[in-house]
Structure formats: C-alpha cells, structure tokens
Image 1 (tube, rainbow, N blue to C red):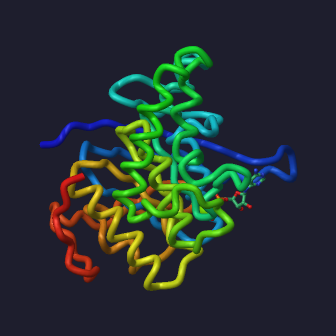
Image 2: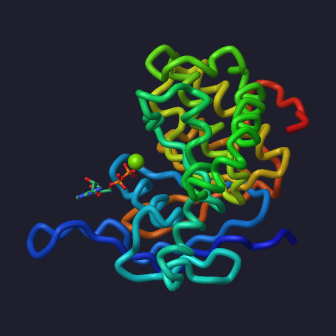
Length: 250
Ligand SMILES: Nc1ncnc2c1ncn2[C@@H]1O[C@H](COP(=O)(O)OP(=O)(O)O)[C@@H](O)[C@H]1O
Ligand SMILES: [Mg+2]
C-alpha cells in the first residue's frame, strides 16, 4: 500500500456573493498517494481549476481541509504555506504562464529564486542554473535555453513550464489541462513526458475534460456538481494507448 501524501476533505469554494454567488465546489473530497498518477475529469466550467488551485494553495477554500503529509496546509502560517506552494508543489498550466521578458533558462530558475534571499541566492545561483540547464536538456530543449518564450512553439513552451515546475523537486506535480492548448501530436508528446516522470516516481495530479487524455492515469475521478465521484481504478495498470513508454533515467 503506497503512502498517502495528500488528502482534501469537504472542500467548498464559491465565487461572488448574494444573488451572484456561484457555489463551485460543494464538499469535494480526494486523496492522492505517493507515485500515483491521478486524473480529475469533469466538464468545462465544473470547477477543476478551482480545485487544483486549492490543492496547491494558490487559492484557499471557504471550508474544508487539505492535508499534506497529515497537516492541514490552511492551518499553517502563511510563510510555511508559501513554502508548500513553492517547494512541495509544482504547477503546470494550460497557458504556460512563462514570463516573456526572461529567457527560457531564467524562467526555469525562477521558483528557485523565490525561496532564497538575495545573499543566499548569490551562493546557489550557479548550481541552480546548472540544474535548470540539466532539466531543459532532459526536456529536449538544451538548445533553447537562451531563447525567449515567444520564440518557442506551444509544445516547447509547455516543456519549459514542466521544467520550471520540477526545479524545486516537488513531491506533487499539479497539471491543469497541460495539453488543452496543443495539437494532438504535441499534446501526446507532453503526456508521454508526464508518464515518464510518473514512471520515475513523480506523483502527478492532472486535470482534464478529455477522456482520451485521462485514460493514461492510474486512477480517474470525476468532478461534477461540486463533488468528486470516484470512477475508475486501474489497479496500477495503465490502459492508455499512448506511444510505447520507455523507462527513462530521470
Ligand atoms: N475568479 C473567479 N471569479 C468568479 N467566478 C469564477 C472565478 N474563477 C472561476 N469562476 C467560475 O467558477 C466555475 C468553475 O471554474 P473553473 O474552476 O475554472 O472550471 P474548470 O477548470 O472545470 O473549467 C466557472 O463557472 C467559472 O466561471
Ligand atoms: Mg480549468
């Protein structure tokens, strides 16, 4: 039995107030175990991004708890919660969210910068850049390090975003429709990369409205009417028809 790392219980989140209030999450409950590839499915607008943001502490719920290794992250002092957001979690978004004025390598290094003061940053700068370069190499982007995001294709941008999400070696990778903006072939390559990361031990929670994309997960759950309905547990066997997954040393 693998170790539980995340447990979200009774998550409620509404937007707006009074007559304009929209109750998006109404008691969503969810668990993720170490090395699991969990997919949260649901129709567009059902609250998948809202839920993922709460899981990653980018947003706070109105009610409910998110326990990371047994501790409710919303009970933690803001600075400690910030560390969770920055170090324990890596985020990949549908629209990449790269900083256009920085080059690719600098974009990947940013989460490292956030965790250090100016003076300690000076001492780890070289090492961090080296690690970022190694990650870019692993993503097949070694020759793009000095490029600006707007010089890259969508698939390349998403690879940069994945490298950025991995720079602090997060326990949990949260991916919000990471292929939603890509053509089928490019999206397939990104999914293959995520599966490779997972095979190497990375815990991943991915959100998608696309059943085909969801089919590569270990476990799929459905979000509808603000709650999670458990669906398919594939007993660890992936039922995807993705390209042959080769085990890679990551
Ligand atoms: N910041 C916000 N303010 C008001 N309404 C929002 C906000 N973010 C999302 N919503 C609404 O909440 C619902 C769920 O949004 P979202 O979590 O983005 O859904 P999904 O990711 O499943 O498409 C939608 O109806 C959306 O319009
Ligand atoms: Mg969304």
